[in-house]
Length: 179
Figure 1 (cartoon, rainbow, N blue to C red):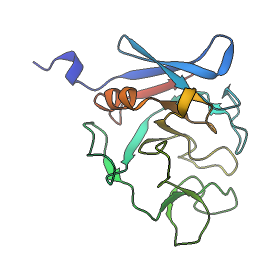
Figure 2: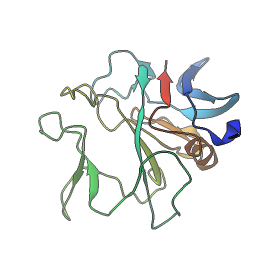
Figure 3: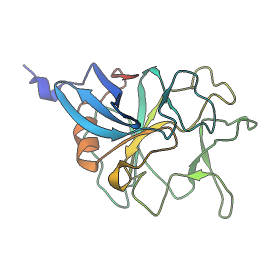
Figure 4: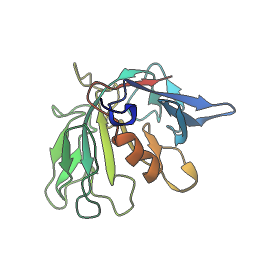
């Protein structure tokens, strides 16, 4: 029989903290960890550039990780190492909006290889994925937090220890309930 701690999570919940909509709590299977949310708090009507973390029920699609910095984490998710040319399209006028893209040297875009460690582990979620609607928000991830849990541009961020613990139990069927 598989121990409960070795089975995928059915759901995780993310809620804003009392008194500060840019901070929150992630709860999964009886444990709770602090998270940073978007500078606009949790929003039901997410728009590109509003800084809001989208309210809703989502699913993780895959893990992206910096293989040049870390070994592959244990997870039930499909996993892909981040390459230097990997980026995310955040331009609502582009046909690749809210999708991973490859950038040549010198091209602009949200590169996944950052000098800081925020994107060392990225869980891509299915926010605005099927169908993709221009302007409804892009690049909403679970990723690592800034010092002091400073707000994100709309993602949910956490400590490396919390991320690795969550990844061990996350699968494509795990519901991510934000709100």
